[in-house]
Length: 632
Image (cartoon, rainbow, N blue to C red; front, top):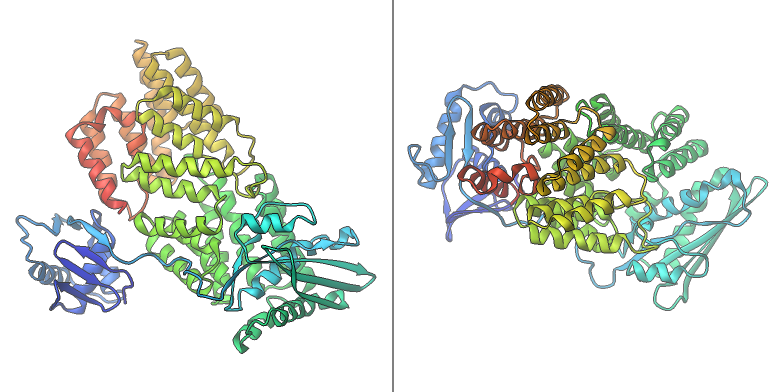
């Protein structure tokens, strides 16, 4: 049954009650016609093909095109629509239908619910290795992760991820708690003596630093899982928390019985969290070692899914990205979900992967499942938000920022929606807020640096006519000392941005130099090659301009072969504009927005420098309107 509700003209489509209302009156519709209307409302302005309809309404059942015609006719009759002059359902001959009415979402996306009275925010810091034993140093993170996950089973607590807190020296933990707006903070230590392990922990009041509960557990090192559970139970008792039977079962559940597999998983996660591409192969080896020790270890499959995904992400700006890595990632995530259907991390990983595979509907379903299993986990909310688009993305990412205000990617993801809607003022406000928090020293941004924010702000400034400000933002992007998977990609984008600034100033030599710098990062990048063709054209060098356009055309064909159809369409449109074919450029972009799955396709158009010649034309305004409608 659909969960979202919509307003469509004078009608209200009630997802919870599964009905269509006009005013206070229910409209008589068959279940198939209602399903069709929910499908249309979820994809406004988008081509819904006959194959889409068959898969959505009659999965696994062989029906004729006449069945589609009949249900569309029933829906049109209920809406008072006319095929000859449609206001709701437009027929696209030989292909399908497009819902052309304005759609307003009435249901917010699943997000972190407001904490009920009595629910306290808590975070667990890394445990201190008192004995400074390098062989068990991994337990500093391993114990913190396990205690964090166990505490999530207790309804009276809202658990905040420690990665959202700044790193502070021992004795100053309350400072971290204040940044994270916490009520409680768990600190602890461990030490090994031979085969014996001691774990100690305490819960402190984040406002006063007063110790509210303490726990200690001693035992053999292989019993570390049991020792961690004892710590959580003792701390809960000290805080007088209600631990239900279901919560106790979750706390005592074993993800693996192998201490070595647990260690391998923890060490692999630490490597991935650096977002350093050089660490990914070693992380994969850790996860594979964990699976060799315990083939049924679902979390190790999740780790491999993320590692393969990072490899794909590192290649995503290439004309032909590593799609095999994306397939491998999805396979591991599905395996994890099959091994443990209630493992929220597996469903969140699927949301991330399916979104990158251009399967937004399946990605959103997986993301919602993860959030339902662990409503307070910002990572799941973030992945659902990035899988979704429009208002649902904004609701999710707003909830993420409330928990983790230093997460730069949440601001970037929100700004994307505002750009697509043509609301550049709101986009800039969002980007500047993210930049201000990310640029603060010790603000807890080490794991997730703010790559891309200055670049996007620079494009917005350029679109608004402020070339000087734009150039300054591109310089800031290039000057940022952040190493991550996206550093080179956004450096290329920033050099391209500088190239367009130089073009606007009439500095052809400067533009050529900047575009060449971009090509050093990503050779055969289509947009950059078209930029160089434009430089040659303006310089009167027709042979060189033609040669660059030929190179760019080949690059576009590579994009298409690599499955990057939206990027190929954008580059092809730019190619047509540089060739003086304005109408063809508009047609390419129109086909892109009509045929792309619901989501972010074409989102940069309002700030693309090369789109400027179209922006104030009839075609340009129509494209902007369609793009904005997709982002509602």
